[in-house]
Image (cartoon, rainbow, N blue to C red):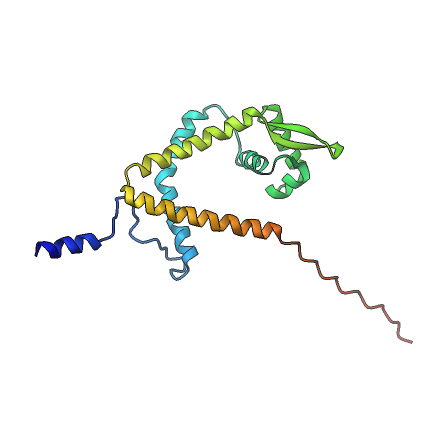
Length: 200
């Protein structure tokens, strides 16, 4: 009888108080693995979001940065050096609005303009040292919040999650690289208007 109990206990999955009961939502397709993972990530984010916001409030007190400005900082860091026109496309904001946004970030020394060696009349954008440090504070706050949550979880659960997420990142990166390497598809020529024929 003791052996039976031990066998059943051995085959029970390792769980923790952070495991959601079901990674599903009424408005998501439960048969779609991507949808289920999306819901799981949303639940995980909710576990740490309050810690992240609390840390950011203390670390970045006095820094008044809008959501669009923060997005611009992350975009510039990812694609630097980047032209203003291309950044405008990434942000989905008009060129004049992007120019005004960048001017404010440059004034606050979070971003800097650099000369384009291929076109000296054009400026390229990059983060300044202060801008890099500004984003680093946010990322440290996020990493600390996740570490605080994960530190309470069974190490075996952490190891399995690490392996799964590593495989997920590797495949997603490979797909992104493959998509970037593919040449753009030629756009079909628009139909030519037929010449208007006058009736006799």
